[in-house]
Length: 216
Image (cartoon, rainbow, N blue to C red; front, side):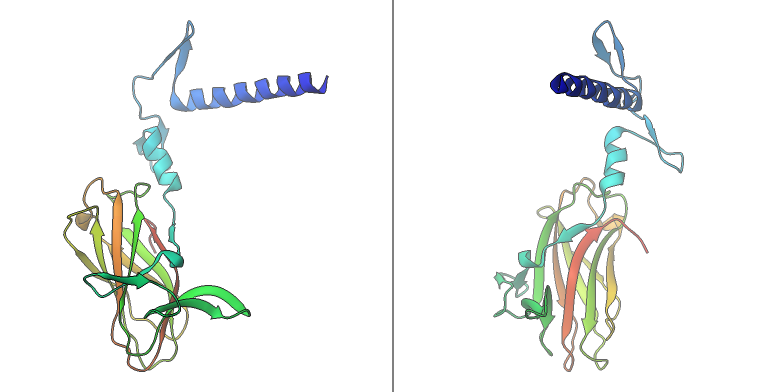
């Protein structure tokens, strides 16, 4: 009996979900055949813009693309040197051993070796600015360097150069913005090299690297 009840409830739920999707997409069933609507622009944003299913879903899911710190590579600007770890410059390590095992990237004073990451960006809107964001802090207030980004889209693209604001001795979100004019239409992969400016006295620490279309 329980099995029969569960089967009936499952069928009812499936029917409700199918009906909702059918109405949302504008599809109609006639004589056992599913027919597409006259237009695929079936979703309307709050600003009144009509979008098809892919455009609508892309805008809804195009949030942060988080870059795992364990995927970062050290580079000398021409070649990859090593995967980041405790023996590289900069180094990847725990913030404070067993007390705070949060991973972070630390540049020693006077070290400005670049780090490299790559990520697919198919979920982002390449007609809008793309942001590279990260948390950063200086060990003191003597140095206030920026972090430069050299970005490449797909393969064989021209290098795009952008820079963050000056870093400070309080933890803050830093944003590097890439203008739509610098993003090839339909780009699907992004490679980025991050290089800190001169900091002869204070160390630099960054964490929580992400890529998105958000603003502000």
